[in-house]
Length: 419
Image (cartoon, rainbow, N blue to C red; front, top):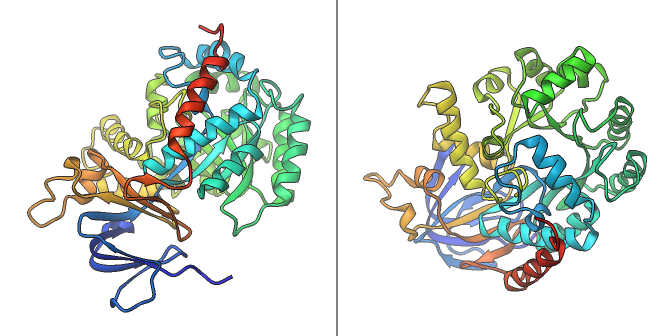
């Protein structure tokens, strides 16, 4: 199948990785590359880019997408253990594939509206979420939850792993959506479950996704039970496979960070979630970078994060919390924050330079990324794999109006009788 022709933006500004800025006429190619335009190429669209800023699209590396349905401001003010046991687990016990479909469609709409093209998800009925993302034209690494409790989609961990075995067998490296194994945590997964999940990941050459060292209580409980801290414990089980996604990874020791590097793991910084739930600590970026660990950025679920999937806001908060925690105003400047939030992106987001939040542009026209990271901007266009998911401020691949109606009706039913 031939690749779609490129898109031309005339008289525009493009930033690629490392803050590399290019101005003029630009071609965006479906394979994720860009080249200068001579003006005579065969293009899919020829667009005026004079009031637009082009960047890599955001990548959200830890999500629970369908929580858009069950949790905006739900249980606000709860500590993590109450939030899980009194709010989330009881309501999730009633979740159905249809609820997941509606919640995921709402999440897809928010991702597109805010310039994100990828999510590494962890939620029930993963085949439903995967289909929603695919239909919306978004990329995803969709993890099916595995644990020894709180599994409304399966009677036990073995059943969940059985479903995942089938999904993983069909993984296609060229597809927009792939599947992963989302073992919840060391406190909800037995040693046997963790070992079986790792074995399946090795068998299918798949990625694992797990919450790691999110709170002091998790760390203390793991040490009291096993004599090891969570990363050490997982290492002792030979759990890690290359590319294992470790969400939060906040309360860790330096030897654990070195273990993550040794196992080629990915650590996901989730500052808004950690701060909203008052976990008392967030991932220490300088220590991870010094060790050479692959670090990404994620919002977590709408229930526990800043109530959404806005990666621009997450990048801003990451910058602020890293500087605050380390007493260092030089940490994570806008260029580096943008690289962290877009790492791995093969797609393009196009922002409105006439948005008041993007002004002034600076004496030498050099404030684009700082304005975007610290102030935000309207996403006008989103290009994924050569397809326009959003154009001129209108989302094309999901019906936002229909989603709003169905989500309100669903919540009214879902929370009937729940305080």
